Image (cartoon, rainbow, N blue to C red):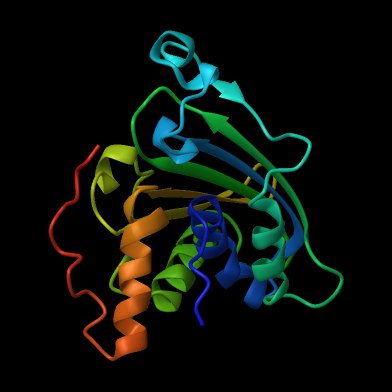
Length: 207
């Protein structure tokens, strides 16, 4: 059996697993997430009507989003007990598809080089962690949702805020592909012994 990862958890888990595994951050993280309207499904809801959602950004799920337990569960695999403290705040953005997450965590002092070398070391760590993953790419500048529009990629941009001593990781994916059906096809390929990228090269653009 395979439980397909949720659309929101995919980015933060990929963003934080490498540094939690290496003990580089304190297990107390903040995840600021923004999703297109298609993330809510296709059922009719007043707050998803064009006139309600257009020209507006709003936070929701502050009392506990349904994807938060999955994020905590999976991140717990990469650090010692107790489970990491996770503040997860999703936002609705008036666009059709896409999820952008910015993850924040305090660095453990003394584990990274001083100054500009910290960001370079972190980026190299991520590149090594995902070197053999066809759909996870570590990029050199903060990604936007158009960069993953219709494809099965998750883009990661890790950096270090030297002033505050915090790790900042920006992740980007299409909630209807890597965040949903594309990821399910990828998992099915692995289960069936097929090439992992089979059927995932062509953009899927409806809606």
